[in-house]
Image (cartoon, rainbow, N blue to C red):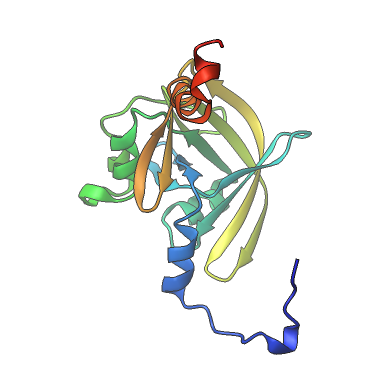
Length: 193
């Protein structure tokens, strides 16, 4: 491996547009973050959820501090993470702001249950997590929200919704595995020769 000496490298400032463009190459699972209680609820579409720890079960999500969800998460100390299945594109778009929906209006058209913490969880999501805020680390424009998982609801669905290059993409383990096998194995192997 050839390493370029630091003094020969030219530092070029990274523009927000360049950074966004580069990050579009990273495929992300699509989730809805829900916050609030009762009629004072809101949510947002994100691809910034990740597992932080298995023991204790902990999730991490990055949320813009200007988002309507952020102050409700801080106030109530709880949030929901709803991992969308491939058939929930309409939910992803509604919570991303398509159609101008805001706050509680984003929840219309889908079935929700109230978690123990009071946050709404989406019925039919691949998995829905009820999280208690453990810590919020505020950096730059975002808050890194660390939440301990208090309860999980899972469905039998397997096809997930992902986001890649500015588009929603369905990912189905069974269908996609079969497609990959068709194109990646030599013809002799597929015929059992």
